[in-house]
Image (cartoon, rainbow, N blue to C red; front, side, top):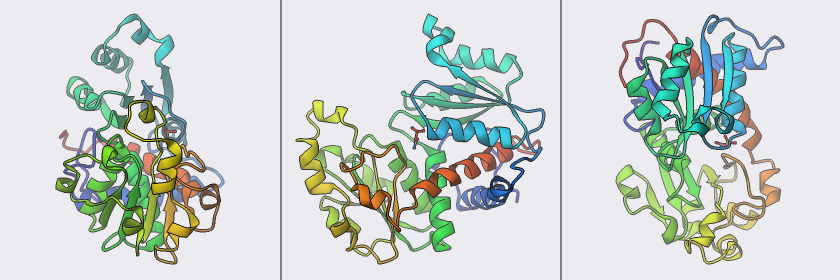
Length: 312
Ligand code: CP
């Protein structure tokens, strides 16, 4: 397995099928460690991993932290509000300061699109994008792809419907890049006010009726409706959104009988998806969280190997 020759993981845009396959197959090995009683390996012994999150997170931050610990790394989380960031220290200076302490990997979540790309240019530590603005959330898409592949055996030829606020969704963008590279058909559906104009150029098929997007789908993925959008006039009302685009039992019957129901979390139950579907037999939402640890173990392992040829 020699495909992943990168210093950083900044996004899935432009990533090759061979690179994606290497990450997914490494995650398979990491999942065996994760599910063992010991949950311990020494691949990252002597390495240090820092979580630098400028936005809230439960799943991404803690799964990176556990992934690093399970592989034997030293870890720390920077509480941005009580760090020198609050005194005005820039992202680049913060990254350089952490690097001077011997940090090997910086896991960065930031509200500005492109922030991880900027940091990666200024530090020799590996930078992993844990979500940047509305650009990408590559590790979420990788865990989604890993979950689908585990359940369906392949991604090639599958129809994946992503429903909701596509405009502001870094999860949707990373999934479109990754899934289409692996041969899946990606359909997106949502209100026209929440649909980016250039989304078809990324390779997705656009639907404005949720029923048409879900019809015969192998996977139906809901996205969180961000209530703050309503105040900006992008949604008529939450109730109206749910009526027109909510993922319900009735609508899910249009998908294949064995369709997977997915959501990156956190979920607004009864808004973008009905509560019974979240907890139902077709839901793999909890498995997504477990697989998130395996994917992050795989990325930490692959990026800290010594034989890479650094490229951005
Ligand atoms: N899916 C996701 O990124 O969740 P968190 O915001 O809890 O990390």
